[in-house]
Image 1 (spheres, helix red, strand yellow):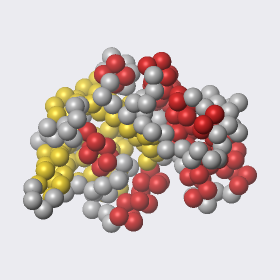
Image 2 (spheres, rainbow, N blue to C red):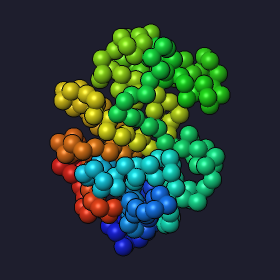
Image 3 (cartoon, rainbow, N blue to C red):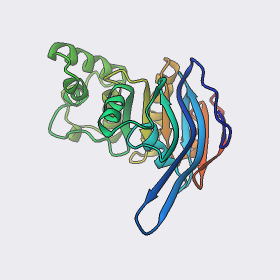
Amino acid sequence: MARNGHAPRPDSDDIIVMDDIRKVYDTGKVKVEALKGVSFKVKKGEFVAIVGPSGSGKSTLMNLLGCLDTPTSGVYRLGGEAVSGLSRDALAGVRNRRVGFVFQNFNLLPQISAQENVEMPLLFGGVPLKERRGRAAELLSKVGLSDRLEHKPTELSGGQMQRVAVARALAMTPDILLADEPTGNLDSASGSDIMGLFTELWRAGGTLIVITHDMSLARRASRIVETHDGRIVKDGASEAA
């Protein structure tokens, strides 16, 4: 749980290690330093909430954690694999193997059923039809939607759609589940319900990272990392730990 300027020492339980990560966006006319030497680590089985105001660097940090982008400098290891200098194609391979994403807007395909949405990563992964259908049904049952397998997203509530998105994110058994404002389009009750689901997944041994602006939801995590002006300014256990 290192702060800026103190490189974390990796051990066998670390799933994420970031060492002096900097990210600079160069528009040609101006350079914007979005991250300014961030160092921290996440252990297997942690539930981390990353919070901070707009422009604090949390979205950039999320993109790097999820292998959607690479840092300008510094070292990032995911599951022991150095990913900070990989090509776009190699980074995509790591992302598909190791990271499950949950987005604010659900990103479900509206024309197919909940089960078929969950099957999509397995289909692209070359998993045979019978196996992927069984896996999708199992995951939807795990998130409390065993009676909604054939429902299309338009036939589901916002909370149910996000549960389908969580099941889809778990389809390839990723090392980490990364959620970007997963309650942003939900009412307070549904949002609390989704955070409760994340808590269940964490207690079952999952590693979760949630990006949120809502401190009441962040406190459901075991650890809170607060960003401000491209730096980590607070990092410690929450009330749930």
